[in-house]
Amino acid sequence: MANDIFSGNWEELSGEFKKQWSKLTDDDLGKIEGKKDELLGVLQEKYGWAAKDAKKKVEEFMDEKGIDLMDLKERATQAIQDLPKQLEDCVQESPMKSLLIAAGIGFLLGALFLNK
Image (tube, rainbow, N blue to C red; front, side, top):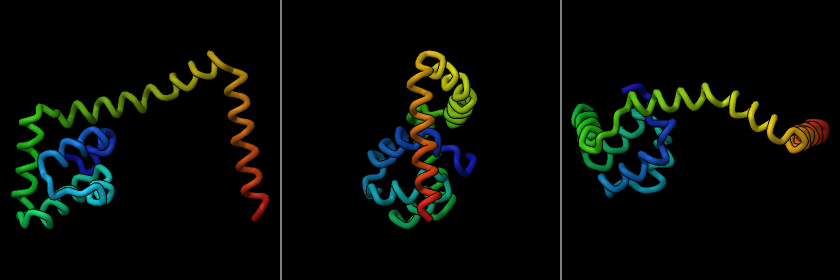
């Protein structure tokens, strides 16, 4: 598992992990933020497991639930690749709205930097 492979779908996965391991708190999940190493570390701390046992239990859980990490990674990668096209479509559908949003963001950034 890549270190940050969970991050793209962390909200979906975090609920599943919390159901499986009830000692995980919302603060723990916030600390983990989709990072595999953090998840394993918190599980080791909460349950007193060795590193290899924590890794094995997470992998078994993912297999049981039918969660394919590579599929999650591919979907996240595809979503990132589709983002420019979606943005372009949004601008073409509502050019005036897009222009006003861009102007507003520019105004806010200008106000923030000029006030320093």
